[in-house]
Length: 124
Image (tube, rainbow, N blue to C red; front, side):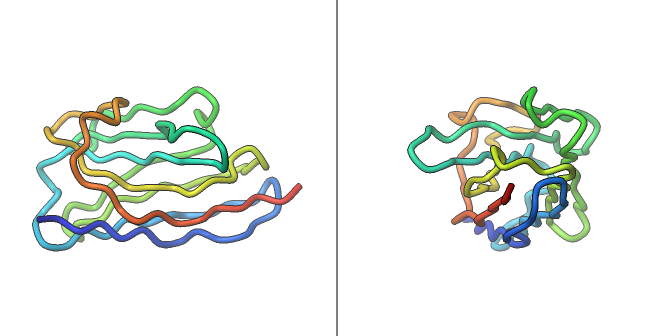
C-alpha cells in the first residue's frame, strides 16, 4: 500500500510561485505514472498535470500550460509541481495521485492512490 503526502501549499499573491511536493512511502512509485489534480470549493476535482514513469511524457490542462511544470525524482520517490505566474483561479486543494500503470494519464479513474491534499490560495 502506497501513501502519498503532499506539501508546499500556502498563500501567495497573484503572479507568485509555489512548488508542491508529493512524497511516496510504503512502496516505490518509480514504475508508475503520477498526476496532480485539484478541487476548488463547489467544483468537481479536475486534472492538472501528469507524468509518465520515466518522466519522458507529460500532460497539462490547457489553463496551466506554460505556467506549471510536473517533474519527478525516482531516487527520492517524489513528484513535484512547480507553479509559476499563479492566478486567483488556481486556488484549490491540490492532490497527488498514483496511476495504475506506467503511462501519464488525464483520467482520474486510472489512478488508484491519492494523497490528502494541500491547500493553495492565490490572492488578487
